[in-house]
Amino acid sequence: DLHGGEKFQIMYRSQKDEAGRIVRHSDIVYTSLTVGGKARKLYVYEPPKGPVQYLNERGQGNRRALMKTPIDGARLTSRFGYRKHPLLGFTKLHAGVDFGARPGTPIYAAGDGTIVKIGWFGTYGRYIRIRHGSVYETAYAHMSRFRRGLRVGSRVKQGDTVGYVGSSGRSTGPHLHYEVIRNGRQVNPMKIALPSRKNLKGRELKQFLAHRKEIDARYAALGKANERQRQGSVQTVRSDAAAGCRNGVRTDPKDTRPCN
Image (cartoon, one colour):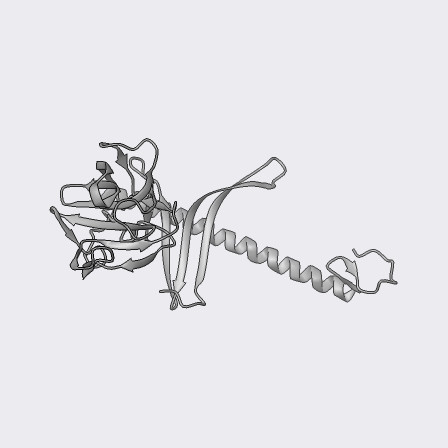
């Protein structure tokens, strides 16, 4: 959890024109978040084969195979378990979790997988179920609409938008009903120990460590360059002030001599 006073650092690629001016910022290559005096570093690594990965200093993936919260900016409005149904009025199992959000808020695939069901599904309204390997599936209900082009058999990646928050089916208002299904049974998404992504080993790990060393060197050089620039600016201000100038402008408006 964040409590204020944390330190966040980021390094990204940029493109310059022939005059050396930055014209475009590009991909992030490194981030560091310091919490409680401990730095948590992540390196963006694209192996020779396979998708981009986000790895810590030891080449371990930081992302779980499944996301617990496949939506941004939402609040948890109903937990997993038995509850009094807000429409039916009697107690029954709520086999997922609900996230209240504004209509049209994007809903993300919780992990890499294949869509096995998409369409209207009774009281669930507009519904998608995604299979993630042989053990896990996830389901998303009450959508307003699906992302265009999706169908049964479509492959999705973790974080891909699959639909948008709505209130279709039996619903009291706009929200996402989210389920995690393990071996055919719904389980509590907030409490299960979700599998981690595969960590690098052997030759792959050696290649990543070389990449990490290069990124660390670039970040250190960038920090030194920024410090030199900052010190130069301070020295310029001080020398100007000694000559009756500050930041290239005379402090006395009656003094018409130029600032050097």
